[in-house]
Amino acid sequence: MRKKIVAGNWKLNKTAEEALSLVSEIDNMVKDEVSGDVSVVVAPPFPFLQSVGKLTQGNDKMHLAAQNVSEHESGAYTGEVSAAMLKSVGVEYVIIGHSERRLYHHEDAQTLYQKMKATIAHGMKPIFCCGEPLEERDADRHFEYVGKQLHDSLSYLSNEEFDQVVVAYEPIWAIGTGRTASSQQAQEMHEYIREQLSRMFDAEAAYNTSILYGGSCNPGNAKELFSQADVDGGLIGGASLKSRDFTDVIKSI
Ligand code: PGA
Image (cartoon, rainbow, N blue to C red; front, side, top):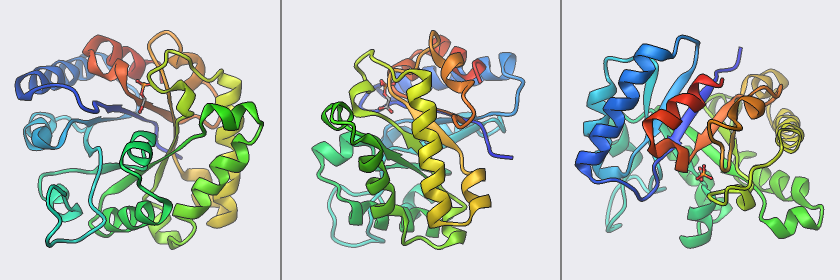
């Protein structure tokens, strides 16, 4: 059975104090209100990983994620954070290839592949993001575009490495815009992604891969999106910054 996952990507938000109060609210609400089998993942900025992780330690539904990782092991790379460092503070998941990193930090397919390798080698799970810009969807090239993203960064992984991978489909035109993919658009892309994965890896592994939807997912639309056969949860930006909204999204699964 594939895992249901709801992950909150905090991006460049919150101070130390705010991060701790947000995560303790989420932790309490999850304890009190969430009964189903779902992994709740929080991805705070790097400086707060350790303190946020300590707070969620006793709650086995809660898991810690980083928003990025260096492709390098160690050395003279000022400002970078390695997979070994993340692992040593209790990180379990790493978001890789978010469209904001591809766009603003020029992360290319090869770099993303190296980040995936580093993450997996250190015993963490990559959440690999893919998704098309609006012009590709308007030109009806969205399947081809996402297929290439998957192929270019994932196809060189072994079957064993692939077993650790979570995929997030995030159409760029839906991120932070208030515009969401319809549940049908999400489902058909998720089905396509799973089919592509089954060509690159074994079919059972592809069947068992969690594929999350991201892009203006909120308490109002989460239930409908999560009810689709190939949508196994969400990667949530804006709505993950408010404990009530985030918990309501989690409860929609
Ligand atoms: P959003 O962000 O929910 O604010 O659209 C999603 C994401 O970028 O992961």
